[in-house]
Length: 313
Image 1 (tube, rainbow, N blue to C red):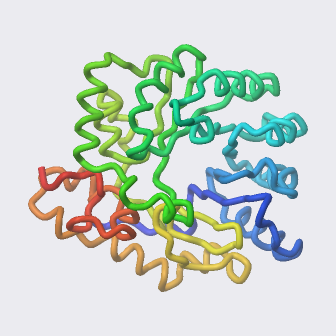
Image 2 (spheres, rainbow, N blue to C red):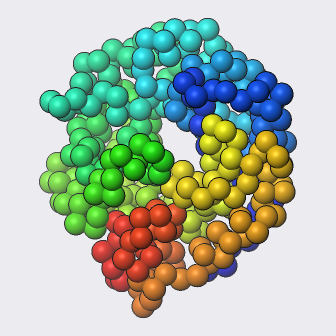
């Protein structure tokens, strides 16, 4: 697989937390300025960005640079209060479902209440769930929830590899058996996406949940970690993506353009160009290109292919 290398990433995710904010003001301004200078099309502010002390400045500067902004939110009272103080036309809100999962399942009453509160602040939220073994059973329920509550966007993002993942463990990752079971349940349920726009990171889940919308993934050209994708940690260091925790640069010290010309970034792309051993003789390799290569690299999956893939097809 040969992919043209971009000069800077198109999509950036950036961890902004209220709890561990300790970067000096001048240093933070440098990092923010270098994000603006990279001219990404999309920036997703992850973790608890609404509670970050500089969130208003971040939004103003990125919005002025014509960046399409997304903010993740856990639905806390403090986040909703801060939301009421910001300009909703500057960003789109992504409401994480994970904080609403209890031992009895999804607290749909509270989730619906928070969605109503967000709408009271003139925001139309998407909902988001990182699919794992412990929550994949809720996906069909959430599709129905979207219909009932007129939620127009449902996001299934890639798995975040950080300290929280290390606490959860590799055993939470979906396997090909889990994907096949989900396929059968989805078909039996009669669920559909009418009126809902799904955004599904993993190709194998997309095939199962939205096979009639494959044309909307026509731009897919294999793993884009360290090419069109980048992730910024709270300390300003840069990773190829959320699922590949290898530091390839530091925005407090260098620009995105310099990082994208670095040996660390090129090493990532060389790994991605190489066909995984587990994908040899697969008829679908030119469709998926091995799937999520960062996740495969990090957890050591069989043959170096996406953990959700059961083998050559």
